[in-house]
Image (cartoon, rainbow, N blue to C red; front, side, top):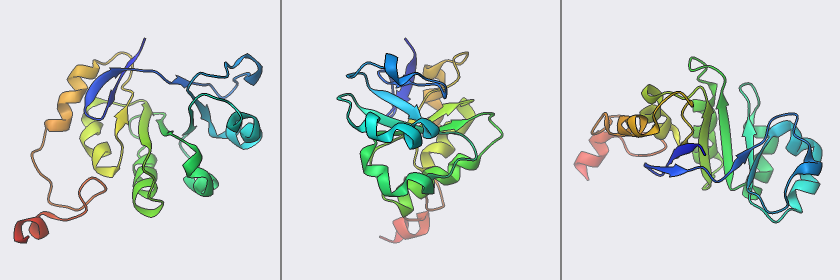
Length: 166
């Protein structure tokens, strides 16, 4: 079983991340699943009828605006980083938190490395599935790499100078 970082601790993964070619006929009614955006757009009505938890994952290049009106249906929104150098989903996480007010879990999946976690958290991520060849306990320590940040972000809406004057 894979272990992920969630809410600043390493936990066992309880959600099933479905591939883009998943067969809904073999899907258990009670499992918690994270489905690809394309599967949600095609079979959303059937997925809503399930008893298990529901999440959606977006690949790089897929826009959150496609499901912005449906965000309350998802407990998890996973954002896929196909390579660590593709940072488009940093913006998606900020949009989810700041523009759309999404309160559920925002998870980073794919080529997720230790060096990115602190900055991902600043953008609104609260769960990270680090690459399978990496140690999640080591990656967890990266969330403590910096004691404070000057700029405002999703995790701290006030810049340091405003916090100091308060």
